[in-house]
Length: 256
Image (cartoon, rainbow, N blue to C red; front, side):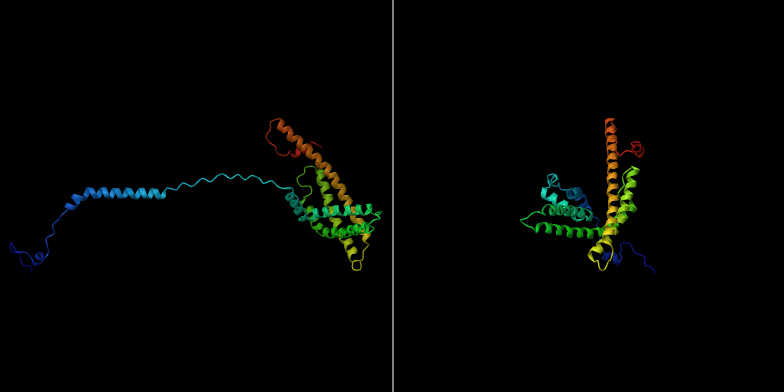
C-alpha cells in the first residue's frame, strides 16, 4: 500500500541524497587546451616513432679488391709434388724416370776406378725401385676395369678410331696388370709362388707394347681432330659468328 505524498513533502531517501549539480565548466574552460595538448602528444609520439624506425646510416666501408696473389716458384713446385704424390699413376711415372736414370748412371760409371762401389750401388737402387713400381701396379687393375666400363680414355672425342684404340688400350692394361702381379709374387716369394717369372714378365711386356702402340696412334688422331676443331673455330670467327661451340659430329666426320 502506497501512501500518497502530500504537497511539499519529500521522502527520506530524497532528503539523504545530496543534490547533484551538473557542472561542465571544466570541459568548456579547458577543452581547447586539452585538445591542443592531446594533438601535441600524438605529434610527439609519431615524431619519436619515426626517429626510432628510421635506420641509422651505416658507415661506408672502403672497397676491397681481391687481387690474385702471385704464386712463387716454391709454391708451384710444392703443388706439383702434391699432385704427383696423390696419384699412383703419376707416382709410377716419376719413379720410372728415376729408375731409368739410375740404370743409365750405373752403366756410365762402370769404369770409374776411383770409386768401384758407385756403379753396383746405383744398380742396386735401380733394382729396389723397380720392385717399388711392381707394388704400385697393384692399384692398376681396378683403374683399367673402370676405364673399360666408362670409356674414360676416349670420352669426348668424335673420331671412331680414337674410340677403338682407347678400348684396345684399356683391355691391354687389364691383361698387363695381373701378369705383372704374378711375376712380382714370383720375384718376392719364389718358394711360395712357383712360377716362371721371366715368362709372365714377357707376356706383360707384350701387353704393354700393344698399349704403347695404340696410344701412339691414338695421339696422332687426337692431334688431327684438334687441328680440325681449331680451323672450324677460326673460320666461324672470321665470318662473324659468335658461336664458339665445338663442331658437330657431321662436321668432324667430313674431315676424314
